[in-house]
Length: 455
Image 1 (cartoon, rainbow, N blue to C red):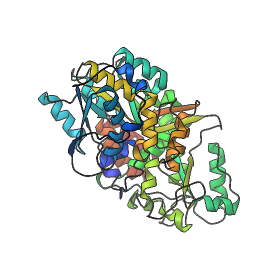
Image 2 (cartoon, rainbow, N blue to C red):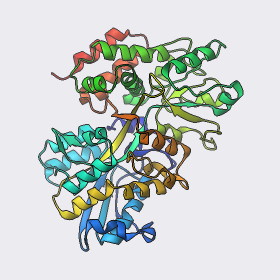
Image 3 (cartoon, rainbow, N blue to C red):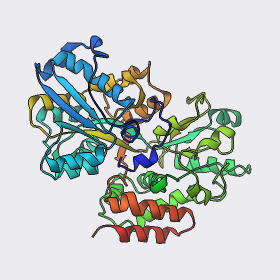
Image 4 (cartoon, one colour):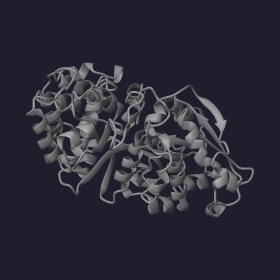
């Protein structure tokens, strides 16, 4: 995700559940440290022989992942250090996204940068200073990740950066107790979701609640709603065309997707339980948007996995808890579009130790270490990772996200606005989405966003 995550994730981060990219925007000021030895004693060094003897070699890694997530990351590096003899020197800086571009201009790049979105990765590749992945890394990615994940680490058909962690956005938060008391069933299709919403609305209760306030980034949650519906109503191929501006922002498919989101967000019978009318969505912070579920004032809140960190202390987040989430369904029970984000390991130095570390992070060995560590590093798009590794430290939301991401039917797409030009994705899209919530028509909204697209 882009720098707008700084606006998004002004959460009270406890260190447990700002999954993957959310962590890149939150936390303390930058620190420099090498990884510790935690976890190294359990390493089976036979798994690391393929990386060679790297004694005396150092790999520098620069990232926006900061405390407390940085320690979880360093713990996954420790067995590699122990077994290969290499030193992985981490630099953890919440201003990463701005500073990596400054450092590229100054010629002061790290060996590896952890990219929080494809757009930044593409920008850095186009400086001519990035190094393509070698064959071993490419083979590892082909073995462990879907083609869509590989494509986000590629530029102009050349593969550069293996995926690391993932975040999942296609979730609906709800009250398991309410479902049990009312004998509701988790919807498996969009029609079922709509029917259940209508059923709840018929009782006089507003089934949905939402908030899109986020300071200068106000409006961003609407972009996620639209992206989720674009995937479901138009399909992944049209989604890609929309994101890449092969089709216009105001063409038929995106317009229909925003209208589909509007059947929820702009429906006075649905919104905004416990918070006000539809217009109150714009004045409610995204952090507060789902809290009425705990008071029984609404039933549903569409928000990403990182929202788990936003529930008040003492809230049990579990299938039998105070709140939990279910996958936002597709058109049919077999359609599995998934909207989310991810991180990618982009190299800037062509050296055996750098390539070896990239290959390691693309391996199932690394993915299982991340799952074992739990917290915000646990969610991986590696399809061969063992979900059982999450048993001890992963949260229930971690497990749900991993289950959905590893589903063979899952069709993953990266957050669309994070891939669009900044004039659109982190400017006009947010602003016009906010205007849409407060009364602007869908046509005016998509027309104004299209007009803002850089020529």
